[in-house]
Amino acid sequence: MIKTMVFIEYMKLRRQWLWTVLITVPLVSCLLGYNNFFTYQDILVQKEDNEWTEAWTQASLFYGMIMLPILSGFYCSLSCRNENSGGGWKQMLVLPPSRVIVYIAKMLVILLLVFVTQLVLILEFIITGSLFGIQDPIPWSFLFKVLVLGFLAVCALVALQLWMASQIKSFVTPIAINVALTLLAFVAAGAEWGNFYPWAQPTLAMSSPDEVGINSLMFFLSINLMTFSLAAILGVFTFNKKDIY
Image (cartoon, rainbow, N blue to C red):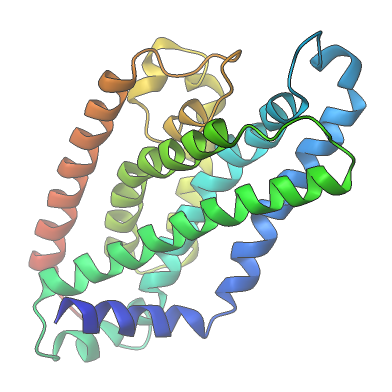
């Protein structure tokens, strides 16, 4: 049953030009990052530094701090858009799957989209860097680490954003709230409490070794797992009790 609902959710999103956004947003982050990198290359690259790693500091600044939190919120709002308009929830919830299954299916599809977005980002980062002439060895282990940690860090955020999108009928309002909370991440990322702030966690998890990142990996993952669990339970509970109009 859950596989069927995941497929239905995927097909609904597929018809909304989703892949254009998924490909374009990481590419814009890479291009902005490389623009910064080559503008300040003499300052950023010191002796024995790997140019890929230093270029990543600039790309992740745009992507982890701004693009990824906003994009995951956009995925969540888009996932609930059809149901929030035109009585879509009534049509969805007359189907055999329970509300819990419907909600979990939406979350799984969104998390899958986020993971694919992470893969696209790494691929576009390598391709654009190669085209721009970076010749240092590609730090595969580092890029794999930021791919995985970035995805894990955004899981709690997705749980919060989906709960918000499922409770607010407007498509724009959850996105606007998400943008405002994303801007607060600029302050949180440099503060001790940033490790607890879901909108700052992606940029901390994807930071380079010479940047201010997470203080303790196990502590960070524990906080993220706890936040994800609480937000997912809250989302399922409130969705299950939601009045459908």
